[in-house]
Image (cartoon, rainbow, N blue to C red):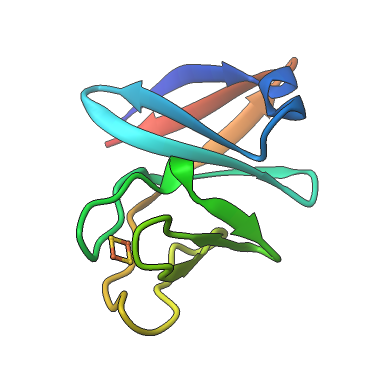
Length: 102
Ligand code: FES
């Protein structure tokens, strides 16, 4: 398990979801209600990039077939998505966002 500095908190000013990579894994970072969350970046349905989707009331909406995942838990919320997203521990220190990758 290693912590990686992946973004500055200020980068969320323009957009609530950011695309990042750490240890070869594509990540989606979200700023939601003052907290930061991290999930895998690819949709579990057909692999679309969730970082190009829209954040809607605590969910990320896939840009390809509009599947929804709960951001805080990665939980798939019904068709066409049925497999949850991997999630990653996040911590924020001095305006820097860190993600732990196993
Ligand atoms: Fe995301 Fe199909 S690729 S819902």
